[in-house]
Image (cartoon, rainbow, N blue to C red; front, side, top):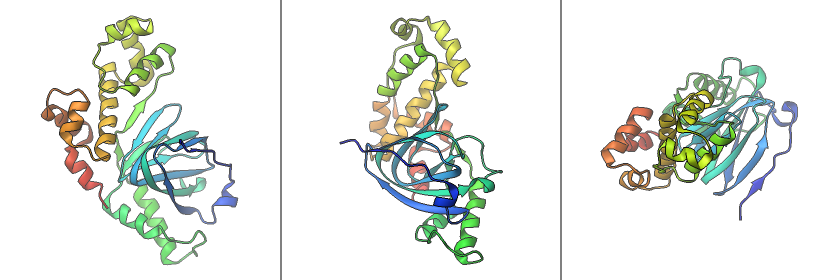
Length: 262
């Protein structure tokens, strides 16, 4: 049974006893958190499992060892692809001026992971000037300097493109060309190519590659081997898949997941 969760609206004063507050949340695979927004910034760190955060701009995949930054007032929903433990750091709006203005997935360095782990059991009303307060401030400082991870899948709004991307959301290994797919959605390949670049900022080939990358990260997170995932994604060879993965994420699949371990 799919778990649909509707969050009530809180004011910062009602929910956040301190400018930086941390909560641990466990959700089952398939759980959906309905679209909502906060009056505070939110960093959701995935300690285990995989979550997908969606906004009107696109979808952000958050595999183990990464975090997604969601600015205040940004409407978003969350889908749990793999049973997840994620640690949510709420940051008062007044403390987010130097943080990104848009959603993004962040790489979580070992020091930041250790600090988050240390803060898991802090009380909501920790006292100013204590070790807990200082650790929270260091967490905020490290979040500000975290590198972005290219795990965004921008989404179009054109109805024809939405039909097209739905094909790839259901089957990332879809191999038909844009002209072939054009007849399916009622537009020429040339028009679709122009619209894709205009609405997503990516060419069709780049968008399809990004979709395959994000699907591959999810499958690798579930325990599938690199060979299995390369074949699932339609690559002719494992080396071609590894080359693509390294080109976008900077490291091989095995190193990517080894670096994410706490």
